[in-house]
Length: 284
Image (cartoon, rainbow, N blue to C red; front, side, top):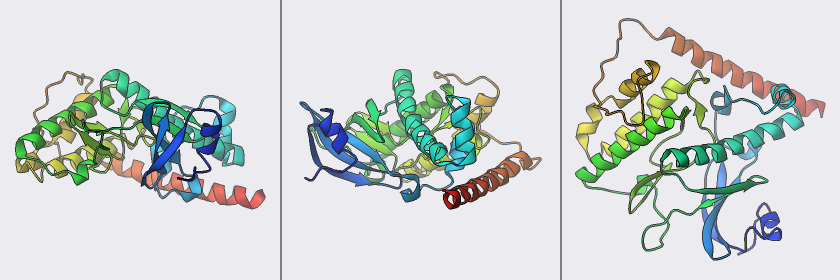
């Protein structure tokens, strides 16, 4: 097939030998199956910010540490340089998360490097060499649903112990091979300690998993792993080996006003960022 413009520099540098075919196109990137020497891998080509449909990116970027103050100031001002640095930060977040989580024992695609907005990584396949399907395309028996859900809860705990929340976990961001689930798509991963939205993002991630696996194992629908995991995390009692029960009763004697206020604050921040970008474009 014709080599995509963004992958051509990798071909020129000898990092990619052949683009075999497109694999998928999502809200933040297009993915291609490529050949690198004798290995078949995938190349994730990140879309530019104005072409991405990923909403509320500012909520996910809160708390990320800039590499130096100049970059941080540029990002805050919304200048061209700042927007470029923000894009690089968005892409680096996924690479960093993949390396960190793989080392921690979470099943993610093995990364090989990110080059000018193109991430080269492992192509997850089954034992017959076919591309692994997304969780949302897989039907399963009840016992498999229970086992894989338990595995996913362990991965969520391991991620949180590494200080990360996926932030967009659903049946569309999990692959399933012959050995179980593999977590993908991590550019929006948030810092659990520094991002004020981490709690409700974790709850949404866990509840998405509960609801999907609950289609095949209805007993999961009455569990509250989200409340249990976050409570243990806040208490400093969460470890990668923590045994979960799924049983947790939240104290609802008072409304979580702080959480609501933080979400409102995040929405205002997103609007300010949008206005800053518009103003910067008019000045350029």
